[in-house]
Amino acid sequence: MFSLFNFLFDLFQSLYGMIKYFPADDIRQRIEQLIGILDMGHIDMDRITCVRSRGSSSRRIVARCHALPKIMQHALQRDAHYVIEVISERFDRLSDDVQVKTLIHELLHIPKSFGGGFRHHDYVCSRNVENMYRLYVNYPNINVREICKQQAVI
Ligand SMILES: [Zn+2]
Image (tube, rainbow, N blue to C red; front, side, top):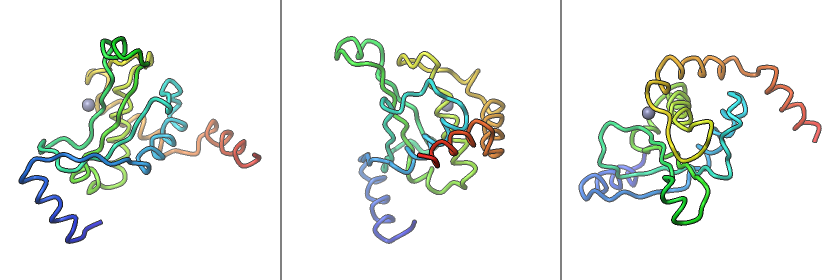
């Protein structure tokens, strides 16, 4: 979406380096769908927050995955929590397929242990992202069809 307001907002943000965060329910819904389709049951959506940011000074980053580190979990007596951030100025302009690949990339950074650490780019590589993406575009697969059927019955 483009508007004069957005244009001026972006200009202001980039001039003054102020980053603002907004809830991203659309990203959350897409991630929920991806997790179902790609069998990523280790990702606990109760401990995932999706955020859209505007005004990031980083020029190349499209999305980021953040975690509450182990020391902070201990200090705050909290379980691990992850944040998927999309940088509006760049992410929102991407084509649908690249957006999906970007979200898959960020989700792959979350390890099976869901402990507050990250999987690195030896695993989170374009080959694994492409493999996952192929699974996604071949939706509906058997598992997903079963899930949808169950939901339809309810
Ligand atoms: Zn990455």
